[in-house]
Length: 145
Image (cartoon, rainbow, N blue to C red):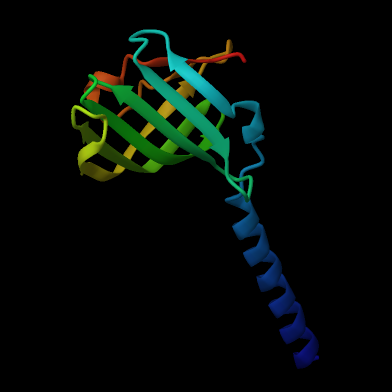
């Protein structure tokens, strides 16, 4: 009787652990939003989304060209819940170029930035949750090939 109870308790604990781990997995189809986007507000920023290999998140990269000499890049991993693509691992990097277009300097501005994009019903990704206040007006629309 004790062995049965112990076995049953162990099986129940294992089932609860598996349920807990699976609850954190996203069933969102990131291929639905994967692609290249352009900011329709500034028309100077671009965004690329790719689903990760596990299919439970999206790799997001945003580029902003300030001038011929400087670009800013944000890289993050986002997860979708309802219509919000959230991230907490954003790395912001600034790159300076010389007159020949070679990288002269690259510096990390910050890491572990948090924020989100809101996905509208018409497929626009609004970066209203950006850590950088200047980015909060960005509205990315998918570029059709």
